[in-house]
Length: 315
Image 1 (cartoon, one colour):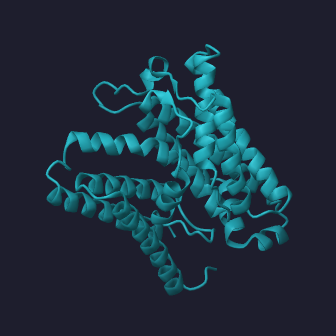
Image 2: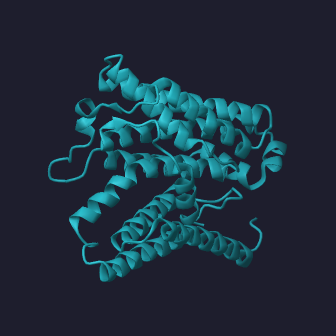
Image 3: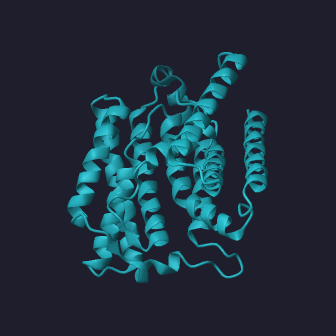
């Protein structure tokens, strides 16, 4: 199992290096500090959201509301700072708590009423976006002066604090998945939930918990986005759920649940960010970008289906 996972990560690294080499040859300015800064700025928010999405999908669910939850958490962050005069140290936990609360509501509805998470989170997507507009008054809240420290590069490293924080989150999420009983339960639930129930394990708490984690990480992503932009935009996070799912799938997590890794999702984020930056450098149109990204997602899903067919049923 570990050898297989390391092999998958190696393939993703080779894919990423191939993209870097390809765009480096096709676009003169691709191998530059400006491109590196663009890719690095894209990574933290999407990486932490993809980490939460990975846990949800491995457990057999899906969360389509992360983009709207991020926007809602960002609106709460902005209102707390601008209108409430809260210090950043108090506003950040409030944003994360907002995301966690939204995830808790989603998890309770999904598990308690036995409604597919696709439908619940589709509704949550609209509800949270509406709440975002209500909380923010549909106005962008500028908080650059307060949140600027999170956007300033760390001396010597040249990267903002959000990057190492995102890496810590990814490492922690991978450790939870692979080193804890909770993580093993998530894998087992995604692979065969009825069998887990027959084994005497209550599957409700873990299934709710992954949505809480997903929501909390969307709240953290709101902090990252606000730091990068210097504002809390009520329209932020549009399409984030699709980008996160794409990164997770490219990273080797199966949409059918039961298998995957957070590190793989991080590599998927890196591939997605590099692909997006490379296409932008080549002047690709928006339709072409979407076609290429969609093709990459389909190729990843097809590769996973073929791999599972060759490996046969898991024991």
